[in-house]
Each structure stands twice: as C-alpha cells, then as structure tokens.
Image (cartoon, rainbow, N blue to C red):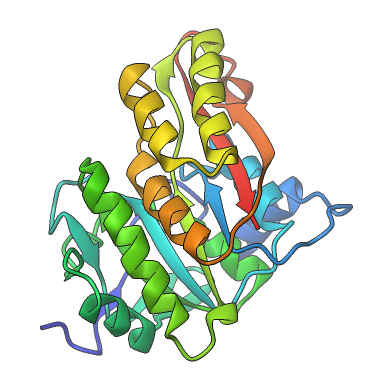
Amino acid sequence: MMEKSRIRKAVVAGQFYPSLKEDIFSQIESFIDNKAEKCDGLACVLPHAGYMYSGKVAVETISRLKVRKKIILLGPNHTGYGARFSLMSEGVWMTPLGQVKIAEVLAKGMLSGSKYLKSDHLAHDYEHSLEVELPILQYFNPDFEIVPVTILSQDKTALKDLGREIAEAVKVSDNPNDIMIIASSDMTHYEPQKQAEQKDKEAIEAILSLDEERLFDKVKRLNITMCGYAAVIVMLSAVKLLGAKSAKLVSYMTSGQASGDYESVVGYAGIIIS
C-alpha cells in the first residue's frame, strides 16, 4: 500500500524542460498563440518530448483548451517498471511550478471499477511521459488534480475495456464535467521526414475519426512507431462513451523542424476531442 505522504519528484526537470520556474514560463510563452479561442474539450492528445522539440505543439494545443479541475493522464510506460496498467492513487507530484495533487477519490473509484488497473508507484517514479505535461498544464491552470496512469500493454481488448471502465468511473464521479482525459504520445520515431509524415497522417486520420479500431490496425499494419498509441486507444474508447462527437488537429510538426535533421525525425501531434 502507498502512503498518502508519497511525493513523486520531478525527475526530468532540467532535461526535457527547464528546471527554473521563470525559464519554464518564458519557454511556454514563446509558444503561445494569443489569438487562439478556447473550447471546453473532453480530451486531447499531447506529445511528451523535450520542450525544444514538441513544446510548441503541446502549448498550442493546451492554450486552446479549458484545463479542467481533474485530469486523467494516460501515457506509455517507457521504463518497463511496474504493472501493465499502473495507477498512482495517492500523494503528490512535484514540478518546478509546485505540487500537483492526485485526485484520490477519482483514482480509487477507477481502481475499484477496473479489472486491469493496479495501484503502483514504481511505473511512475522515472517515467517522463506524464511529467512533461504537468508544467504546461500548471501554466494555464495552477490548481488541478491528476490521476496518473501508465500503460505497458498492446492488448487491444484490454485497452478498449479499460477505456469503458474509465468512462464508467467518470460518469459516477461527483462532477463528471470537472474531468478531462489526456493521452500522452509522440508519433513516428526516427524515420525520414517524408516517411514519418505519411505514417503519422494515417494515424492522425484514425484519431480524428474517433476510431480506435482503425488506429490499432494502422499502427500494426504500417508499423507506426507511435509510443503512446495504447493510451490514445484507451482515451478514445472512454470519451466516445462520455459523449465525444468530433476531433480537431491543432498542430503537427517533427523534431526536424527544431534540429534541422530531417533524416531521422520524431513526429508530434496535438489533437482536441470535444
């Protein structure tokens, strides 16, 4: 059992994003589209690379959203530690902008209603895919809580089932309208720019169609190295049961646009689901 005093430290501050508050603010503000209109979306897809590579896509996307009071944060497990479906149910996460509390009541509701989720901190201790989203979210809303979930599974049935379980937990929560879901994922990894763009276009079209079956098929058939596709499948399965009707691509770019290396790029997409 985890203790309520558990503190998850910021392990990639100074690597994926700046370690100082003023530097984080400065970098985020360099990416903001001040003319963007905000919407009250149910969910979004965000990239999770270093801010110099994917920060612009993430900030442009979040700047168009109302950041709700509670966020179910889904991402891939890059480290291999912990359970296949790991939820950290108690404690706080630290960033240079302060602490983010875990939404314990929602987390425990998700745990009790799921045959897949396990209460586990080990998968989260060194994983960057969720941490990098937090300072950006904190910039736009300094007072929100999270339910962090990492996924180490490619079982389509389990992923869709977990999405349904999450939707049910949201529906029976005190205020479902206070909850949003974020799926953290980068797109194609380490392929030439043109090839990455072609593959990512296929995956993005499936997401925009709110079709998790199609996304799974595209990823497998085209060998799309999208690290968080499992998180996106869970999110899509959940939000359709929560009333999602449409999706919009806010921004797409690759690491080549930051590094100048177009021979081996990583793709980044920001998508809002309403």
